[in-house]
Image 1 (tube, rainbow, N blue to C red):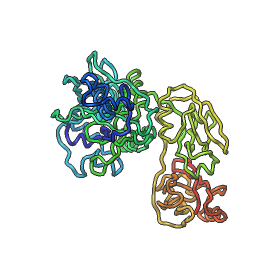
Image 2 (image 1 turned 90 degrees about the horizontal axis):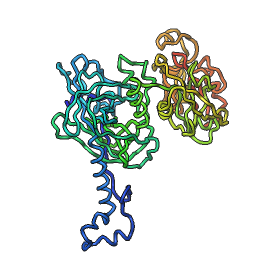
Image 3 (image 1 turned 30 degrees about the vertical axis):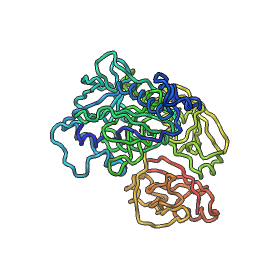
Image 4 (image 1 turned 180 degrees about the horizontal axis):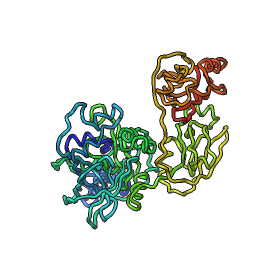
Length: 520
């Protein structure tokens, strides 16, 4: 695999990690009894040695057995891109800490001829269906797959889903070893996992890298897929609002070339697809990420059975609950997601959801983030009815929602950001405000030239981190409608320090959102 393609991967690589062995316990035959240790003497008969291993030896043997079980199903994928196809892979807008790993160095010359790239994948059926990352095979003019037994096949793309970075390809062969799906929702932080990749690099020197680690965290919203879609002229806003990012984090060492490889549990079941690292220099720095298997299983099954992904749809825009939200809405705990908007004509609208409702569970499964809610809905089917528990006015309620199919033509409009000369300082909120005028309205895309615009947000002020951004119009502070910056001063004048006040804001698109801020 060329350096160009390995660094160009939008999100990619294998998570691996060496961890301490002490105290770990595994399945089948793990010896922990005092009797077993006492019996383990130099004079013990050779035939009883297998039953007298130490815990460390048992752990090592279990990992070796697991690697032997999984590696035959992991494949090496190589793609060829013509110059036209390669140029279509525009540089994604990804955070600085991820940039050096995924992109070419700034100013690096682009090859004039065909480019070679690729990554890893794994078989999900005996007749040649393979799961990998979308970015591994995106825009490929030719795809070849190398199996564990060194056979090489041309592969066809069955289907891709840019919103989850999942793709399915197929080779024409039979009686192939394949992996089964596990349950990523049941993964626990601290649980052992193994990752297998087949980077290859075209010389066979790094085929089948096997590494182990633990689950460090779940539900990480990296904003990588959405940024990539936004930067791609083929997708932009059309799909970026549907990006699903609820990554599993691991402490595993991550290296280039392993995008699309499986992360498995100790039973050999796939619980994730390795996808990203965070790095300032392209090397491992302690953070690796994988797409949850529950989501990949649903997406890949849709692709195989229907040729495309069926997108169940709830129709809400949400933000994670903050301590201020919990206080303002009289929640029993700081958990759930605040409904910031409800799409007109959506299933959520039909079920009566309103801005300010706090969703806490779906079918009894607790909701802790927007990405998790997206995944919970995404693994369902269109027409399925779900029980959504939520809080309104301090009271818990339940609504039955019949999921619809996402209208991809509809997008979650984002607020444009702009900075202007400061006019009025709402110091107690950590905001700078300015009266709207026709010039500002035209520049930001507002139809109405009246009102008050946020021109700056203090990065360490009360409003920071609550979804308040430059370029949003401030419509209301508490119960006071805002038409001038002086209205904000009046609304804040009688509020004691530390009280939570609700702000109503509006984007140029007309979409509104709420933010609960503790005044200083």
